[in-house]
Length: 277
Ligand SMILES: [Zn+2]
Image (cartoon, rainbow, N blue to C red; front, side):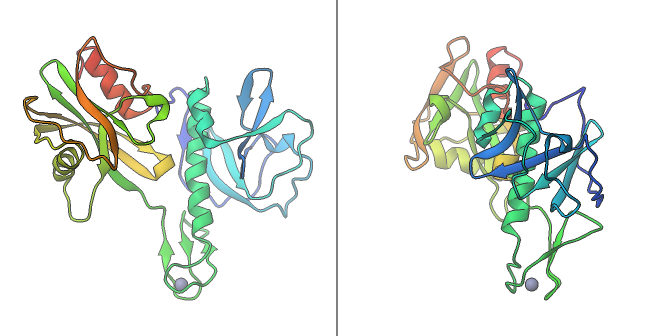
């Protein structure tokens, strides 16, 4: 999975350090996506030393550290010392060979969106401030404190002996098949979400729901919680056409093209195919 980046490390712990070193990484997300440094065929995150006009007055927000090097978000596109820089839209991560950098681009994107969408207080409308002792935004008018919101969602491998239920959703990337997934609703347990989502999307009752593992998914501010469930394949499939183009049972050894193992869904399908799920 894309977030499994060992031996590299990310430390998400907040810091209020504003002193940016020459080797620190700089994340700029513009209209055209994240700014990358290009060296031959290699893409890397630019460093402060790559820029001309970086001053103490440049507004930079500490994001996290990558292999003990600090990473900062900037709002203004800095002037680069040479031409070898290009903006790439966020989906570029799917094609990157260095998945640890792909993962960084997603994490920075989630935090960028959070800072950007909380410039004003949702309670009273006043301009907000960044707290200096933790990653939080505070309203100086009504004291509302805003933390990054993580939305739990389930993703379910529905199996029946050597068959797995796969779907192709509206907006499916490259026509890949994938697993049923959906957000946890108010008041629900995870197991209730699994049963509801599968029934809503394909009209099938599942049993023997068991937890697999989880994966943060920054593009949708989600925490994806993977489950395996069993179902009888003699139940008629009735798809929710607003979300799904097609759904069906597929035999191990004869699966259609499915999402790669960057995501937990892709990993679960791959494990099923190998007989390891
Ligand atoms: Zn307020």
